[in-house]
Image: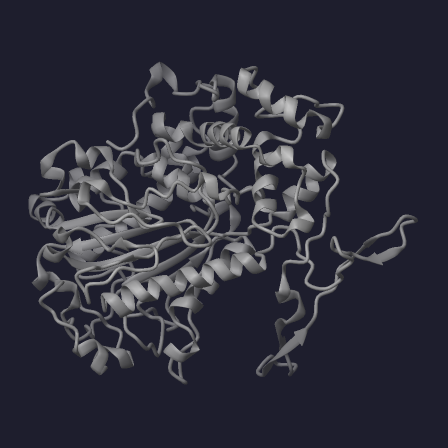
Amino acid sequence: MWFEGDRRESAYVRFARKSLRLEENGERQQLPESFKQTQLADKASEEVQGALLPGGIGDSLSPTLEASTGPGGTSFGPPATQQLGLRSELTTITSNSLCDMSMIRRENARFCAFPKYWPYCAVARRMTSMVATSKDLSTWDTLQWRRKIETFGHDDEAVATRGPAGETEAICQAGELTDKGRQTTLELGQRLRHLYVNQLGFMPQIKSNAEDMYLRASPIPRALESMQQAFMGMYPASARTADFETPAIVTRAYADETPGNDTDDMDYLTKLFTKWMPSSSPRVAVDSHPRLSGIMDTINATLAHGPATKLPPQFYDEKALKIIDKIAVEEWYAGYKENEEYRRLGIGGLMGDIVDRMVITALEGGWRSEVASSITNGSKVPIKFGLTGCHDTTLASVLSSLGAFDNERWPFFTSHISFELFSADAEAQSPTANQDLASSSSSSQNKSAGLFSFLSKPAAPSSQTPSPLSSVARVPLSDLDESSRETLRKYYVRLRYNDRPMRIPGCVSKTANHLPGDDSFCTLEAFKEIVDKFTPKQWQSECSQNLGEGIFGKDDKHKSVAGY
């Protein structure tokens, strides 16, 4: 294994001991076509195999509805879904920079001379800011402007930054979402609309507010921009009423955010890349300067864009790309697969939140968010759909912690995970409180409730003001009474990664833990039991515990296999 003890401890410190702050080189892979082995087909459920669309997402639709499949050719799921009612859906998407200029300028410009400034950000021509127009801040207006960037010249004079062909417009900032990134995340939103709005009728055709949606992004600007683009694709201006209320987007401070080898492989990489490496660090290694993961970032960012910013051909050697991908995945994610503390501190907070919302939906009729609402006192509307802009490292960490990332490549651009919560009892549908125009539209009423129970009309919204705190939030499964656990057994969780249903070992291993006939549907009880094992009780204080006790802690107490 490439990820030896001292490297694991280093990665462990990077993730757990520094409040898990997101690193600048978070977004990585746009694999060349030869590597995009899609595996979108779910062989166990005999789904149709589809090719990845530009940006890395295949469409996932229901052949039962109108007997059709989407552009990606994949079906929404096996016939087992006809027994179930879709209750909530959370999609997390990568921030999809496609051009992490911060890493390119900081590290890799040292070992290869290629353009530092890329003209792939057309948004720079049409920037908009909110500005106050009165001293008491009672009135505001928008200021439209164009962004131009300058830098030092040969004699330190101020000169305009220029792209490879002398461009001075549309120059990207460090780590900014590029034009292609905006395109692919917009397309992702359009595919989500096609599935959850047009095909399944789970979300309304037209919205007057976003009160039943949870919109969130990490503090990294490109993550916010990716989420906004996906939302725009799902609900464009034509699908929003004229009086559409300004939606709330949730974020957190960085500190509170929850989303050297000597081998034949390294010899091969060194032979290819050594003449571009700095003289102080001529050998390619996991922790060389630049790091191997940094080299991978640059290679894949250049693959995604035009010929003017390409590297020398040696960097696109197919064997080299496979080696780099394998080693980078081992370096960053092996710890999640084998260390409970790694999972708990690295991704446990986020997974605990996701499971909490599912459990609250099942036991309390719906999860409501105070901060995600545009209403001052918090919304009475249960959240049905969530969009979160995150990072490739978030997605791979989630999958690794659930034991569902074996033999996977580094997440490519615009990758996404969907968590879907189904109910086996159609009458258990929680009240949907969004009184959108589409809830009574003819297009929704014409859908047949006999195909999927989640197409049936929900009850009217509750007028009761929700309690600010749930009585079951962060309550371990072992502390729930038998009646509550029995309810959780009637709910099923499905995890889809780039529209491919994933299988969690602990759900597959016991027939009682999954839907009969399809082990990709995990009972909510079993799913919660798995996640509870790495959900932190006090995340911030636990980050400073067990220092100096080795990779797995004293007596290997944290050594455990993920997914059970």
